[in-house]
Length: 241
Image 1 (spheres, one colour):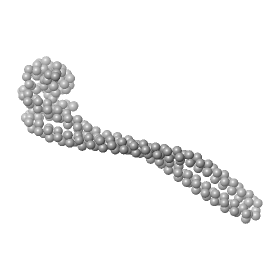
Image 2: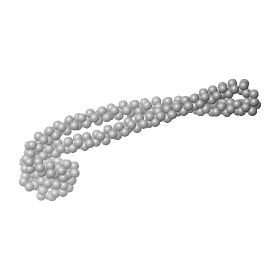
Image 3: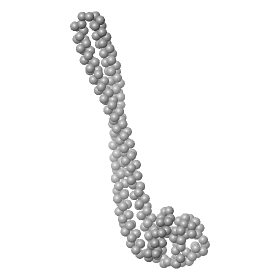
């Protein structure tokens, strides 16, 4: 493998640094939809809890109105039956109407008791709904602000990525076709995309395996570029500092 100039190595290192930044940005951008979905889910859950309590309160109010209507209807029937008593001549019929009036009064009293119990529930329900609404509105405001922050960061990162892409194209043009192809081939083969890494104290900084002593000496003697025998990354010598 022929040696290359130190300038070539530095250009490859800069190209790798550019690629690392672009990879980090793309990773962030890939995660944005999931982050937004999590925020939307949290906001939907807060609204669901509010709507749930709101629906319970609406059902209780509906039930109260139904009881109220039934009581009014029974009071009207009692009034009519009371008036009817004055015109009844038959004792049996008279007793039947009296029983009907008593039954209506008993049922009306039961419904009024139900209404009193519902009034307490309605008061508590109003408080629960108001609290749930406040929680939902606060959560909604918080999440909308957080989503706006995520969207702004996405726009910023997309702008950075566009600049790095242009920088990548410019730096790539400064390398020979053979060297760029070699770099890209390794970049596609390794799992984290780092095609070129330093070797320090015999250790490849890509796979952290000790390279052979002769290869290390070759790298150490002069500006040279080799491939790690373990991970196939392009390797070069750099002092620990």
